[in-house]
Image 1 (cartoon, rainbow, N blue to C red):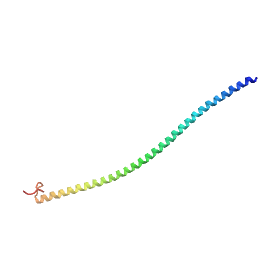
Image 2 (cartoon, rainbow, N blue to C red):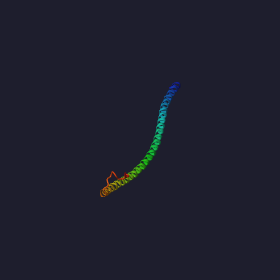
Image 3 (tube, rainbow, N blue to C red):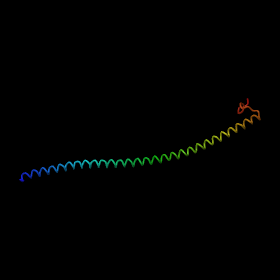
Image 4 (cartoon, rainbow, N blue to C red):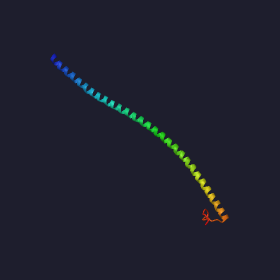
Length: 117
């Protein structure tokens, strides 16, 4: 083959092989950018997850504190209810005793506590 014929064929072959490398390089660069984007998104997701975990922990502590306060208030309310029931019984007992004393003395309720005229 003549030398003038081989050189253009070699030049065309070299151009075609370089074009394949250029396409491969651009595809590779696109994939690298995609990986970097995904890596950034993953890091951002991890930061958000950590922030939310801290928030959940803080809210859990707050709920525990509120449950303890509720329990203390419930205990106090039970004590108040018991005190009220005891005072009602004492009041009813005093009313019965007062009624018996009035019956013995013959005093009416209307005149009790009023000054005499």
